[in-house]
Image (cartoon, rainbow, N blue to C red; front, top):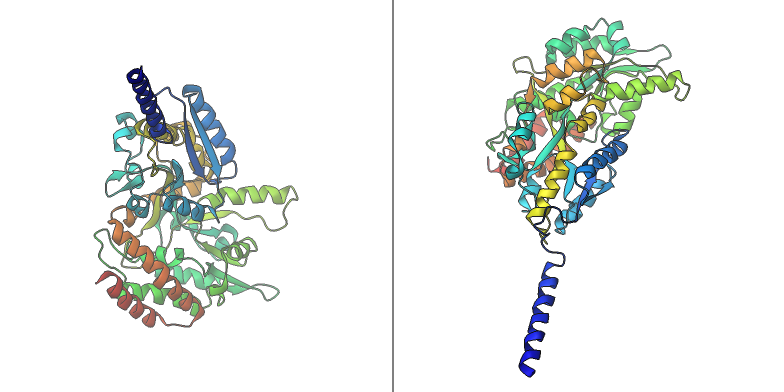
Length: 450
């Protein structure tokens, strides 16, 4: 009896240990077992939350055993919240973002290549699936191609005799932009100034777009070679300073917040705004409707999407990339079946119907099924959609997709610690282009050993 009791005790202990081991551990291998996939995302466009609910509802008709738990983050606080969760080893299963080498460096980013079927791969338009890769390995599925451009007020451009249609189709050089800027800068009736161009003084978008159009894809090239240490960066800085000196841009640019920049564009105080994503077309159309309905006061604007001008002896380069969902696992790995379920949700949030996000944002689609589904339903104006396609032909593929993790991290550090304070010093007149170029060169040598 004692021996029999001992056997039962050992069996009970084994069951208890097995149960504890499975608690919070690997998900069952049974694909029909209940599971929960967490998604952290953002208000990608005005009605994205409703769109997301519809996509999940469709998904659950085929996969009722998988619960999709979503959290809508704010653009201001969301990145910080995600970084905290990632550093703690407990990121969500899916996060809306472009792929980032620092995510891969944590060891928690989920590699997707084994889950991609030939049908999924073939649905992606040429080159677009690459936008979710780091050094050739798939970590994300892009929802759309983001595109940075400049935007113009059609009335002001035409009053100054600027052929914006030609610029949309053929691009323009720095010299041609300077000629146009002289015509677009003037004093309005009542004494107010109309500027050719306005940007904000807090971000790096402006110098990144211009340097990219002067033969430098980024601070580093795809091989990790430091780029901002020769005459090209000095030429870029000098071009910006000339815009300030000529009065084509406001002298107080260093103090301008992005919201103020937009206010100036709406008020007709500037002909061109930088940066302007194609979504501005839809936003301004909606604003015009609100003006007609008496909900908003102001002048209606016809928006013109414009390419960023390029240096006279360099080719045009459009700043583009992919944004969508990136997949993660957690320190307490939930197992292979959970990873498969995560990919199923990811695909459901990135498929044909998900092309509505690209359509709402007037951005290029990434999948043929999206092109087919939304054909004839485009929200952007035909001229601007055509201009976006032309600019996409000159895409400068994000260099961070090719860099190793350490180089990508160093480049990010250089931008934050060196570029940002220097571009603000340029806007404020505290430092000359020559001084800044020299600082870039010396700091680059320290940080990159080049």
